[in-house]
Image (cartoon, rainbow, N blue to C red; front, side, top):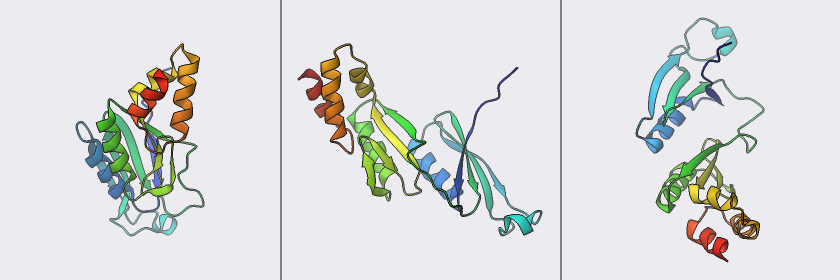
Length: 166
């Protein structure tokens, strides 16, 4: 059995194209809009969308494919049960992604490197160094890192390293 590539679909009320362009602008590089599909008159009695309005946007962020779907209002929303992890090389990258993704997001949903953006999509902005420290054989050091991380909103590599070294 062959497995097709898995693509994440994000359900928006009507902001799919705006969100896709926002994410592409943040991640840059190989990121791009691949295709915009529009509603037409077919099925209008069900979808209740204006013909010509955006139905779905297929986009790519650094080689990963996504679809943003304008499916209309629903009783659910994005939450921390599913998040996207952005692995950062250094504090400059942590600061960049934290600021760009967090701009306009819910301040109350920021904890331990996690944030919700202005669309409610949840991101983890994580330095590679944190993973290394947490995977250390020195359990006392990794424990200190965990304690320090739990106090933070945006992760600060220098403070995490200081906790690691004791």
